[in-house]
Length: 225
Image (cartoon, rainbow, N blue to C red; front, side):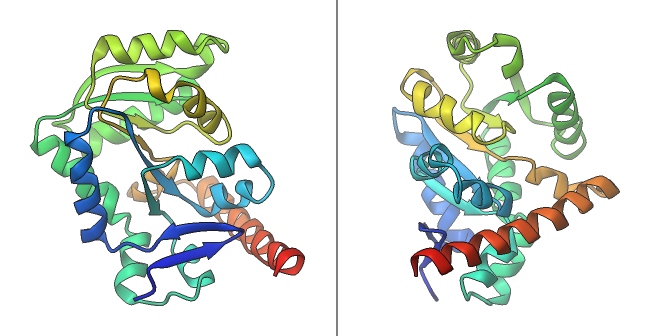
């Protein structure tokens, strides 16, 4: 199996779900914050135009492919890998294992509406999740010490983030060393794919992202390859 994905000047490991889980297990024994980043077609499209997003992707300790189109654009057609990406296998397995270990979680989003939507999803899918805190980035008005202090006071094992790029990238590049948690798991908005009835607007937005992603890949190849 191809072990590396190279798209838009970015390189990612093409791990199987089992390999991703093995890698994530090592994070529990480390002292520093470890970043797990879901890489979606939207994020890669942004990376084609933004150095901040590219830097944010590169600082992650584990990159998880969140869309099957990333694999097929890289020439990977393994039915197993396509299924793992489209069904968000890592997200399901990782959260289930952390809940089984009685880990604590902190939720963060850009605004209150997004946080409420994310909390509703978590409550429906993972009713036994131990949530020890939550915060909306808009509230701190650029003073990142506020959210860092909120996280550290709650002392979670895992921070679950649905912050968008490039806001999340800039935040972590600046504040990573101050955050006392084992894992920062960046889900983006991929969790919405797991809802039983995603909205029509969400699916329409996904079609737009797919078009932009393909254009970004082809434009990059035309310019640099």
